[in-house]
Image (cartoon, rainbow, N blue to C red; front, side, top):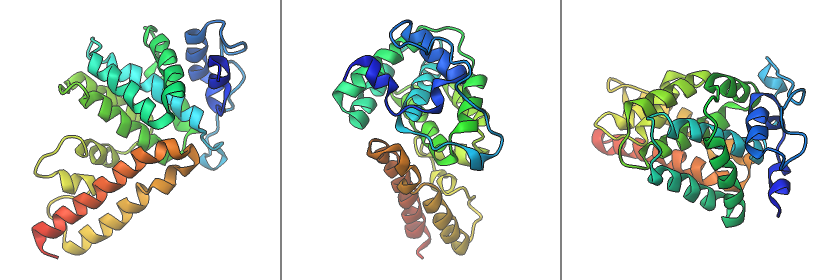
Length: 246
């Protein structure tokens, strides 16, 4: 598959708006008709009218947000870049990953990407479960070099806010990567005063929220990340079961 055919395949709403402009600038003249992204996206205030996010829409959104997070601390660590590349190889296979990383490097050269504008387009066009998956991936990037800076955490928190991710959802996903004594409770979005029945109810709610079927429309390539979140919820619940003996 050629580079131009790859970028044009399975991409819907991300051809337009600020994301389309970023892609167009990154690609230059490689793909005709993407240089400004004007007129291609119709924004919708009603979530019920959102077009279904396609794999390519998620992929491009991920590339741009990953670039923002990697540059948050003012440096680019090779381990973070390797994490992005390895994740894409795991999700898409080597050929598609090579195309994605080629685009990623071009996006990374851009200095004036508006985090707010990009996130607002994603928020308006992408369903909640897929946005949660984006945050999960971004925390993986931040931790890839073994040194998580305050700038990176703040950037992800800012992105989560713009994406319409609640504070509890943000803390739940963050707790999957940064373990402490309260992690199991944070993952289930409860506090340590919760009763056993409240823990059981929280587990059922989180299992529904993070079930891999929520992102099945993105394709099998994104099921792995969703399965990782789902397993973390199961592990948190099992840990509290053992600690409390119920």
